[in-house]
Length: 404
Image (cartoon, rainbow, N blue to C red; front, side, top):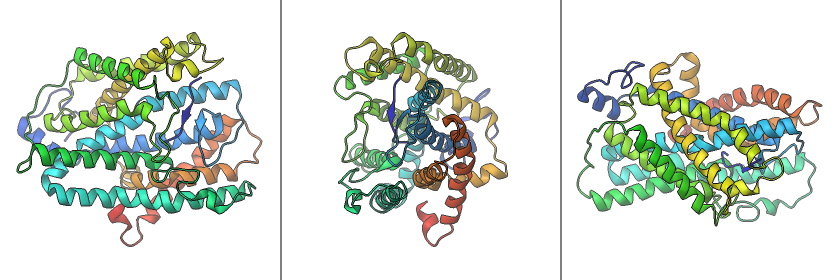
């Protein structure tokens, strides 16, 4: 089965779904309103990242560099790989899409200098602190607890791990890089004015399918040289997935200008949600037909039909989940209760700190004689509230809320 090197591892609820509001209302919501359904999607994606990495620890469905149980049976391997493959297909791409959606408006309001300064504070500081302080200290502490007698210099950045972008913070690194490229593009293309907004109808199903096919084929071609699992070590960037990441970041920028999140037709949302569900179910037959129980190498890349099928499956599932979840949350999840109002402001900090938290949780439970999937479930019950609870406490420290 295909395994993954962990990198991971915000109107009314019907606004823009069954009957789009007027252009004036849509523009107001797009530029100044709080999109609660997008906040709720972010909460879901943050939780999925945490679950994804815990599943890797217990099911062996990838590589989690801090600590792994190293125990795997067939059932755990199949369920873990299925869960992680579905997540990997879309969740970081959707994270980038909704992050990019708010970039143009922020740039328009602040200008290049203030926008870049804000990005450096919100992204650069957590990236540096985690990569150069938290991650090395965590690795040293975990090695000590696990009884590994390794020199502390082995945990300095650049020795065993990335110089920057260690662990899940690769995503923050990518977002900072993409945002900087956007600033350069705006300075060249629109040096004295804002980029023009022009609302247009949501793309047709045919156009979306062609886009998914094109990105799938492009990913297949990239994986001829850099198969799934390959990483540019200095920056901890997995280029096999970058076709999707770049494409969805650009889509997010365009979606803001054309107000697509608030103009998603109900029929389109339903169609791609159904498509995503079917593709999730097709993963197991595809894996079995390709011989994944014996080896997953043909799926990772190269001139293999499995690599092409997997890249296209991933691309279509990504678009299906991005559109389907947007439809679901816009229609049914555009409100927040007490729990969501607590989770939403703490999601970013929880993402930043969850690596050491879930690893410490797994280490504390390592002597429990339970099936890996049962230990996974128990670890979720501990690590999930712990991550968000610690995030809330950390954000109360002086100046931290400005960053996280």
